[in-house]
Length: 126
Image (spheres, rainbow, N blue to C red):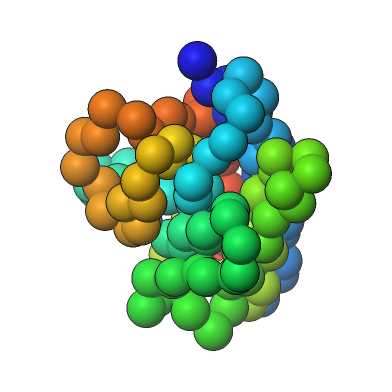
């Protein structure tokens, strides 16, 4: 069983930055880790995802591509999301996800080997 613990959410003004962290435990190898978000009244959407094996392969949602950066520390089984130039439309609960056997990227379907964190709130005021 994988446990994911997110941290780093908070409130900022538009144009500000936040860095989210997600620490994974309970499983020896995780194929991919990523970040998703869900705003009130909206469906959950993929934000960024990164392969945790050899090489660095990351994918981003178009809406965040030039502003957010995902990174990982394999030794610590931790993934980060650096969020810059935050805008009010970035306000959401951000969830960390871990894909154990296959990478599902930014897809938001139900996958038996995907685990979720509890979420951390990000609020951006104008």
